Length: 282
Image 1 (cartoon, rainbow, N blue to C red):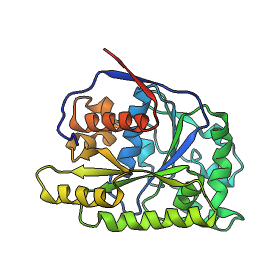
Image 2: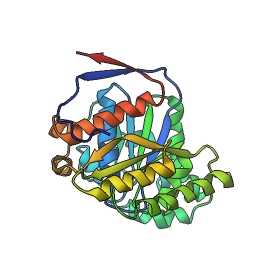
Image 3: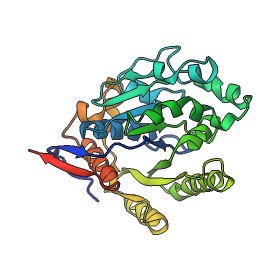
Image 4: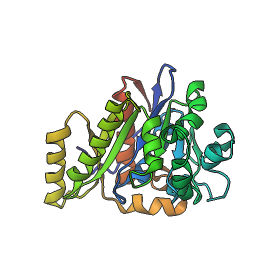
């Protein structure tokens, strides 16, 4: 656990063999746990390593969209592929982060919860729209920023995804929320809706080394989900909170901050778990 490093690492690059795009949903039914912060900064740090990432913003609040430098605009979200027969390829835009593209969100997605629920095969609507992109293999990963709920859009994300990352705030109710997510994933897996779905990893966020509770919560989550828990822990960091207001990831806003160091460390752990080779450039 390294939450105190204040030094930016040397630049790393990743060498990988091209394969089918892996889709990873990032979410928690509880808001304010670092879900969108993780989507923005993990994607940016992966991009810095030379990994090609597409962010799919499924949260009507559009915070991942603005946090990656795009204005909130009508007619730009996946809603148009779900209900307006528009190709998802046409919705892809460049973000401010290197090697990171995005399909933005917009407020209309709030209405999609109702509209999609009325459609046949409603749990597969997002999957049907995104599958043509995954099949091209042009992205190594698609990271989905899910809404802070277990509604229709989140269920669509879980139907599409190969795996799920759960950011968990270091607080008393962390395990309770995690058990709800685990139960939902098991149901989708066992029912055959998405038999490949698994937990990619559990990320502890907003860690405060001055607070005994933070250490206790990490220990408790580790006791129950040790194999899935990332070694990297994201500290509570003011600079992480400030970066979104400037529309840039933390590595662009303050590359030497503790938050930047933590998310760079997470990106390295993420790719090393896949057995990808990391080459360090001095």
